[in-house]
Amino acid sequence: MRRERAGDRTTRRDFLERLGAYWLAGLSPGLLAETPWLAALLQPQGPVTCGPPPRAKPHSRTGGEAFPPLPLPVTPLRRSERKRPPAPPALIGKAALGPVRWMTRNGKRLAYRDWMTDPSDVQTLLDWTNRQLGIRYRAVETDFAHFDFDPRELPALLFAGHNTFALGDALHAQLRRYVLDGGMIIGDACCGWQDFDEAFRAAVEGILPDARLKRLPPDEPLFASFYKLGQVEYVKADGSTYRDEPELWGVTIGCRLAVVYSPVDLTCGWDGHTHPRGLRIAIAQARQIGANYVTYLIASYQLARFLSTTKIYHEATAPTRDDFVLVQLQHSGDWDPDPSAVYNLLKYARDNSTLEVKFKKVTLPLTDPRFARHPLLYMTGHDEFVWSAEEAGRLRAYLQAGGMLLADACCGRLGFDRAFRREMQKVFPDAKLEPVPLDHPIYHMMFDVQSVRYTPRTLEDFGDLTTPTLEGLSIGGRLAVVYSRFDLGNGWEQFPHPYSYGYLDEDALQIGTNVLAYAVTH
Image (cartoon, rainbow, N blue to C red; front, side, top):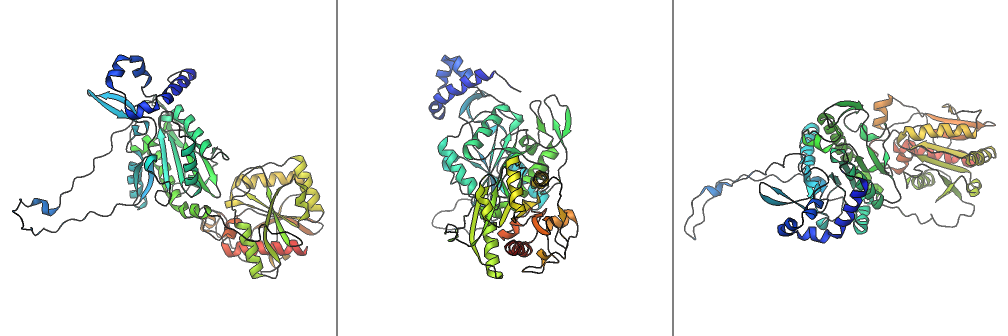
């Protein structure tokens, strides 16, 4: 797939960066003719084009244009005119990437940028998806020089191409704000080109320096947001095929994907064409993945906007004294996917029970001995995490001394569920989590919780659940660990999470309040 040695490519990149101003101004044909080495240096690293140009916009003519010219000041009576329907809302903008290069085609010298290689990919996808899903959205071309970086105007940006590119610190900062405000970045390495792959990963690191692209697990909602994806067909440059799981990478902010990236070509499939180069996913399944992108983006847009806001609680920084304070445990996974969940639970408990609580949350790792001063620990996350032997030992001592731990798998994700069960074996090797029976006091503290409601996605995949399914671990007859395989924190946030396996808001809040009361009284 590579066309040159890494050292040669680095030299070329450095030289092109120094000539950036000349690209934008345009180099004269005479200069290129006199310096053939420079003309060769400025050739694109990847293919010049993959697909056909976009369809021309239809020309329309109003009824009045059929009249012959009349002498002034006569005004013709126009026939009834066909009014053009309003344009559908823009959903995805294709980002203009890469420096301006020049090529000669049919004797004409033309400007070229790498993002133009598949000019109608995302619009073709949206045309197809609109028909499949019964929706109406359009794509636009996005030049960062004229972009306002507001996801309310354009919810997603597509970065696609073959060649290397660089955004710069100023653009990184603007895109960081765009993503944190609820926008989504979609990346696609056209033809599976490695130069673009390296550049896109570097761009994500510049935009979100505290996050890293990770391969999405099989239970990521994107794999089932419309089509339930299994193995897909990969097509190699020689036309041979093989089947494997779709390779998608992403960055999660809170409970939503902020960046999704395919290092294997999808855009050629969206555009419906094939060619003998690179690595791509077959057309039909590339479009199914694209339809899942679109469905996920639409379903998660309001959640993304909700997560972009920061709630301020005046008691959050107040002195603690003897007030009840909940500790949220930091761990090696994504330990805080629902930033406002605990505060909402504490507010609900104060307003709907006799508990004396403050809107106070402390975040500590198990390596900080201060966590042991508080009666209740809470932990959550989507992903895998690992405790060291020291952390497992400190948690064991805390629970044996009378402390309590509440944990839930955010969105009902399997990564956290698997890790929590495994790590609790380090804490208590001879014990295991057991179902908490419905007659246990924890279901009858402040609220009588005997029947509960689950999210639609839970009922779709797990059947007609109607009772709480908490698990626990007891020490000396006291429930020391409470674990929920289904999400509680999304319900505490009291905002729809479209792809969550969990309890509905009121039931999640009542279960949480009962746990608070049990921790205080036991």
